[in-house]
Image (cartoon, rainbow, N blue to C red; front, top):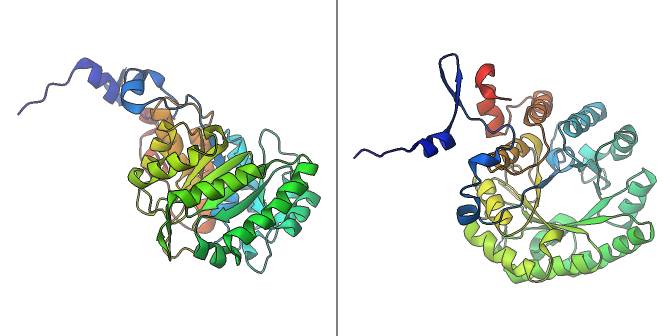
Length: 350
């Protein structure tokens, strides 16, 4: 059976730009809203016109690397990420070097990026002691992290959910006195490596607690990457009932290749902040088998194809990913970066 392809469909498949006698493939290195304007509302829903990406590579992406990354390499990575247009880059974590030796240089990293402009550099603080150390090092924004799974909370931060929330109320209170914004993370929002499926009501409870203690942004993390749109949607529905969408972010790992589809349904539900990690770096030492975070390059490519603005230069972002991957001695974890690296320069549109 022959399928008739209309000229309109062809325009959406290819940029009919005559160059060298042929058609030029349409690569989404920048937003192209005219490709999706006709299908945006009826098919995709009211996805945001702009999405803020929170880059977590320097912290979440590197924290489990066994090879210690030199401070100057971390600083250079952060500088390259900011140069690409990222305005929020999670720089490091003020945790005990005993637990996360990779980030033992947190103070030095903060000192080195003190004069880097154009971006915010939140840092993770597990308790009041970590918060005080972060403030002393010049941190202007901090993040705290809780879990929606009781067993994961105990294995990850060595306390129950309720104990962790009590601990974070102290951090939030101290931050409020200094007018320091606090971001909240919730892990295992879909599934737990030991408990299995996590009830959406439990996620909503923890999210509401973090919101009530003053977190301006609450990032919902699928720590082991088991979520699909079918499980993410009911979780988001419960959370949105108790926390405004403008105060929510999503943080997906790509263990089962579901991260981008989960991000898309999150956008359709009104969320406009997405966490990601350059070149898909990351994982979790307490979540066996969990792969890295969704690659920032892949998120930007998808958003560009949807006509959603991010103000991020994909080429510069890929350079940052290439830089850190070469240092770590591994291939890029971004499918977009791998694919575009094989595209001839004259057709890549980068």
